[in-house]
Length: 290
Ligand SMILES: O=C(O)CCC(=O)C(=O)O
Image 1 (cartoon, rainbow, N blue to C red):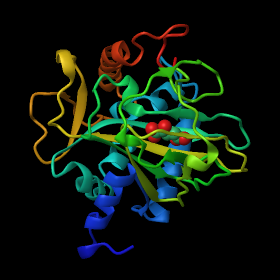
Image 2: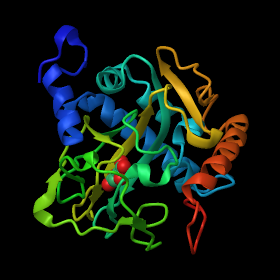
Image 3: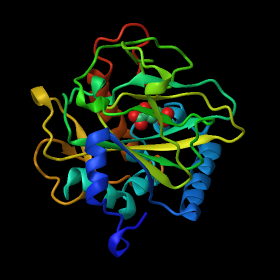
Image 4: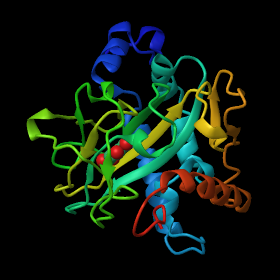
């Protein structure tokens, strides 16, 4: 793929493809060396902090708002090569909404059932949010890459039901109440360092990892600062590019350090506010990745 002036800006046809299909991949964004360095850093944190006095299990911080307490998550999301791509969808004003490390261990049965992201975020049916999924290891059909239903973002939010199945990696085990046939799914395979983009209304999920390597995805959600959450509900964003000060979100600073006490306090506040929306109406275990 060719990027003019060494920038990762999307070409006109790529932008069109994103809006037509609701997803775009593969987008080469990060070098293999940089991806490997990030993987090493993440795996060092996993070793060092697994049982190191954090008030929540390490996995919670990896799965929800990692960018508030883990500088590596913020740095990945702020990488110019990724932001250039995002600018092609959201325009010059870009805020970081959330990040998570979504890891499937080798030869495990965990999966992600078919769902729409916007079904639980209380943001309504908007175009102003996009997810970038960065592969820090190969994401193939065998390792459980994402699968998309082409153009499904052109529908509304479809009802979901919660399973709270322990093999489901989603917070409520939510699944769309519509059967998706295998032939309707597009396999979003990525090599290390490549990105996919998907729209918030896209129907997507992923299967188990049958390989001998970890499948490590960094899920980065960017939002336009123009988006206004209905009913004045409090929500948070980290300015990434352009003018993000529109009064619609509480703006957060980058983390002060790895699991810095001040950031851990902010983390709890953000989690409390967001859980009220994300877990609204849930039956059963109502903790957001406890
Ligand atoms: O990583 C996966 O397999 C699923 C990720 C996902 O559902 C998302 O990025 O919205």
